[in-house]
Length: 337
Image (cartoon, rainbow, N blue to C red; front, side):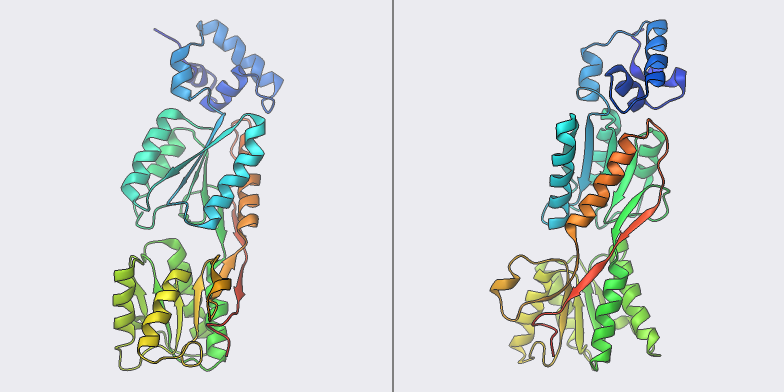
């Protein structure tokens, strides 16, 4: 029977990634661990061959997998660029995988990654993910997992998130202080933690001034043009429509502004509007969209630090803390009044 690095890892009760890095003389593996692995490899009669080469994609510990919904967001593009610029010179390849915002594709990607056994998996979940069994499969396979942006708070793994709760609270508070009585929202799937946090932030702002919460002003949808259009029609056909709006994306804000102008509703004089996320074309439009943004560079730096900590851990567990990166409200033309 051919001996593999899985057998060596099992005999020594250490991770496969540690065995592979030790056999490849990785600088982050201690000399003591390298010698222990080499002795066991010799004892078992391990012979490195093409099967291990192909199975591990050169060797475990040389690949960091970034699994994200898409690359439309500056946050994900910046994270990939920062990881690659820092890790590639060290011989570590960063590979990006796109789930297309679909949980089934996300699970298929994770299943294949478990076979490949990368050194680290960075995962931002699809918007419709509500079964997290693939998280457990990664952990059971001994593959370190870092959750980024869209996370599951129940798993004890490192997490890097934007403070969307505080961003929503700040925006809603500004609206309320400006006289708004009914803050409407058009946001994504309610199962997505990001949108849950946004709703919590607005709720808290409403409760803080002693008002009752009215859930009819929150519309969860797929955020495509058709869904957003139906959401706008619903909200502004209510007997008392919203007098301020928070939407998930700047593109949704553009759609909203266009539809409200058709009804001779002025932005921001009649209804102020704020969107989550940066918008590179903001300087070309009037009114410019007010946004709640997180510093994509800081998110990327925090992620890189956690990835490097994990890579240098010699197979040991790293702290499963949650790093919360602040958001900032940028007041522009759609909410200035």
